[in-house]
Image 1 (tube, helix red, strand yellow):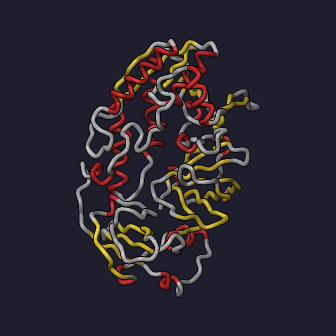
Image 2 (tube, helix red, strand yellow; image 1 turned 90 degrees about the vertical axis):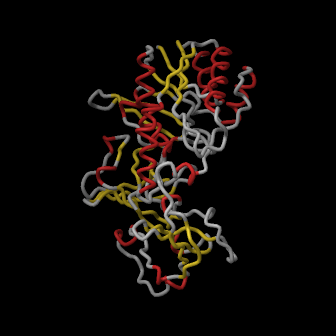
Image 3 (tube, one colour; image 1 turned 30 degrees about the vertical axis):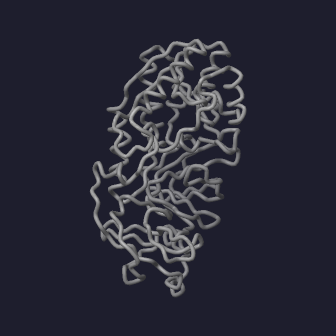
Length: 390
């Protein structure tokens, strides 16, 4: 079997390549460049060139062929343009999820197959297995990585069965310290390389500066909503009420500052507004795109930060396991996360005509439109996902 490793220059993909080579597979490395523009980036102009140089040294050390592919055009059209579009709508996208669905296991996979690859391997901390169903079809499963501090299954929540059939995750059952140890013992040039941060293949960015390439500043009000506002509100009892964000008006609170545009901010954010005079930090609890108003509340326990339910539009619901998809009116107990590294939360999926509702056992902080909610079975298998509507 011929396996292409997406070699990034980081320690995780390096060890993935090394392990496959040791297991006797026909392995080659493919490094992809996905971004040229440095506007808003914080790490300098030539980061990708440094990454490529390290990746080439790793390939030589392991003794595998090294190839290069430029996917910047498709990355811009499928990932970055999507980002700009979502931020323009006042939503907060997750480009890493899109990068895996649209680039690593689509455009990159096709480039690898053109070079003769049967499978593509990455350095993700997640696991994959399969079984044969009664109809004789192979069904693939994504499971959480063994390392609880590095489980990256969430970033793969939009993959489908065909993509999984071609995917390998060689380090999914290894913990990060062990990966570092293997890299050191093998003398890999990436052994001490820090984990990457920021937007997938773009890097760490000054987000407002990055977004200003297409989204122009537009000054608006920052309105603080005090806790007393909620004292007279009736309790939210129905699922639809629990899913609906609070809708504020400027007169419900007090104008305490100005901002440069709701598109540069996100729900739950506490930095970047430069507003003082509070005992506790203030957090963004709602962004009104139409009036260009940001509503904030003081303290981590502010009621506006919490909701018990969310909704995913019907056409946006994605089942990694289509055989387990809920029919009309169907329900399912599961565990859910609404952001990377969030501990799994107990919840119930409820499939209605208006979409898939997720009702949490406990109120969730910072439910953010545009982010992906991913749901898991009790055994750690990820079953599906979808972008939060509101």
